[in-house]
Image (cartoon, rainbow, N blue to C red):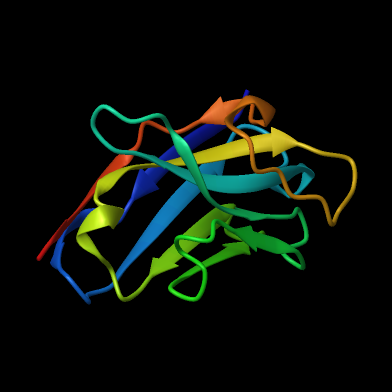
Length: 127
């Protein structure tokens, strides 16, 4: 089992920034590719960003490309999501997820590909 705990959510004005953190425990963190997803009320959970085991490969949804940055610190068992130039449409509950992968450069972008999920952290962006 992998336990994931997100933190760093909150309320900001449009154009502001936030950094989300996700602390992992329970298994060898470096064996897992990580991802961030979000879910707005009444909407399906959607992909935001993903990072490979090594951190060398990243992938972003078009809606956040150029504004969000995913990173990881394998020594701290933590993955981050730096969010800048936030928009009201970024308002959602943000979830961290982990999936076991063999290849060090692999990323995963689908909800169904992830095995473990955090409880989520709310991000609210006001105009």
